[in-house]
Image (cartoon, rainbow, N blue to C red; front, side):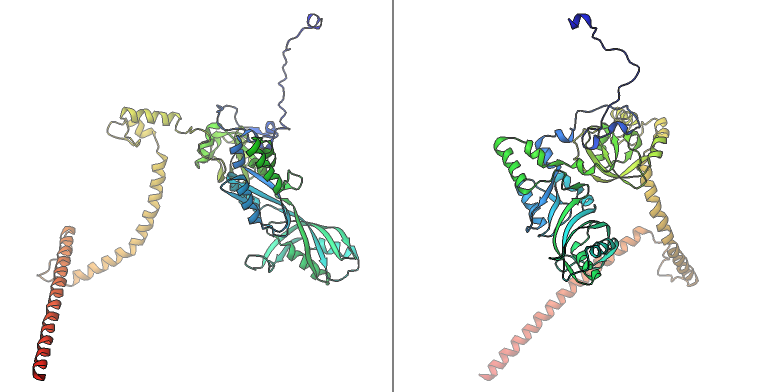
Length: 490
């Protein structure tokens, strides 16, 4: 009945439907809010969404937000993870002492390229400090903890396996959570710079209160942008997930335990590149403006940004050379310089050398109008020689011109000395036996040198023969004398 009474068709609308990307994962979140440079590009089938990668690639380009157990060292834990997952390379986001527990980001294979940036990220800790004597009130301890903020001098504790050098570390924020006056134990929370020693901070806290103090227990609750509530897993979870995949071919647990490396970069400003430019960047090409599709608001000069594909894969970390305002008003130039390439080479196909000039050059090489290296030859038309600029040759010439100028400056004093010696020679008349040195050509000089070497070699051989003959005559004389002595004795 409804089909007969109602009309089912799509009504024409002037309003374009908006794309809602607020729930899109990882680096594609709020993709529609990025500024559009151009929408003209050819999508390629290569690559994949970070969450949809094949399990082998997914593991090799992921990381684990691990809850480090007490007693084993960070190095041991990372080595165990490497053995469990059967991968070649693992790294972590900053060492935790053996007794310390909490957030340890373990990067696997390709994600180890992000370890440096994670190690320098800020950290948050919850610790227990034991005071050696009683204090007046809880408020006194709270005031002391809040006093120890900002830039502080720290010397690493004796237990630390580093050079005990005085260093400055920044405490961003700290507060007292709870205090037990009977046992003289205080629980505190600290947000600090990477490389801060909480053990040293507890000693300073005791000195500030005038009663002495030491660290009793410590747990890291946040490392960089990842905390305890961001999919933290234990060593047992990793072991079980790998067992489940090996025995039941169920990779869902591994995908839950391991996160794609793109999650570590969600706080960076984004730059979206065309698919045809991706592999060129992996090979170290400059990030040029014609290859940019979209860019984010608030990009500042020399800011660390992440360059991504249209599928949301991280290509590299880069340092911005243009602000958002400059990118929007410009149509050419270098947008950013590469800091660290993350993506493997040849994940996307090679698409360079397909432009109009490059194609024309290839055709000319085939026809014999250019040599096999693309350089002009006898049959090259004059129009090509005038129009075409080989930037590689131009850069080489510029590089060669600089040392040439330096060498000329160095030679200038030598020339003065040579002219002085020539003037001296002009004053002293040359002997008739030896011709003047100016008349001797280079070839004659070389011949003379060869003759001298030959004479020296012959003389040295003659001397050796003479020495050997002298030694043999001396031996004969000695033998004769010995015989004469023996005969006389008889």
